[in-house]
Length: 278
Ligand SMILES: [Mn+2]
Image (tube, rainbow, N blue to C red):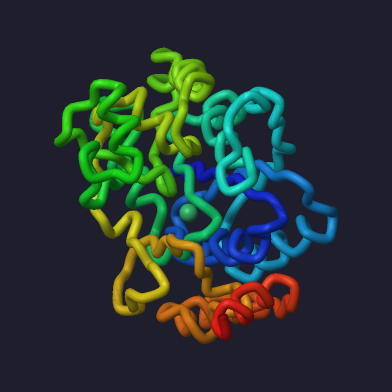
């Protein structure tokens, strides 16, 4: 089987991207071919070579396609944490021709065979994703969802891991519907709010193991699945070394992938260091 997986990344997440791809390929079945697509912005040839080097260390069959991100459809959308890269997810079914596209955030550590997730399909839905325990009435953007008429119990998905049925996505005009919501959206949005507003809970729920919340304060090193480093403290950041409970497992995989676990950046660390003394 060919397993198609897509990432979207800029240089801010180059290191986690490299390790996420590496771990994914490492866990892929020998009987499958991993068909990897990376939509990028601002990568140099050296950056791309680093990705290739890590993938070759996994000694598994793969093919890799690079797509330069086109951010022009999103100029009128609100930036999310200072970037519009997250909206690129909305165009994946136009960029990649495959029945199923498994989208994975770069801030993840996939410790399972992706073929297992893809072969589960989407049960007739446009996509499959994890909703954790978030519903329209307890989501951060609950006022927006209520104003949009979502019922309080509507499950809200996390768009960090999504299995997309490409034909269904395109048939239902999902990209255009999300962009149109984005143009009138008044909340701190990002692709996730747009997708949830359009789907209104109509997605296949995935088991939590396919998107495990690996926050700084919860040790999930005993879990097998896709670890998702949610939250603002990331294990690959200078400060994460001390403050992230999942730093040891991150370091293990970063080392296997041939990367240093953290990059010391005084500029990146200073605001956090100073905040300790305030
Ligand atoms: Mn994420």
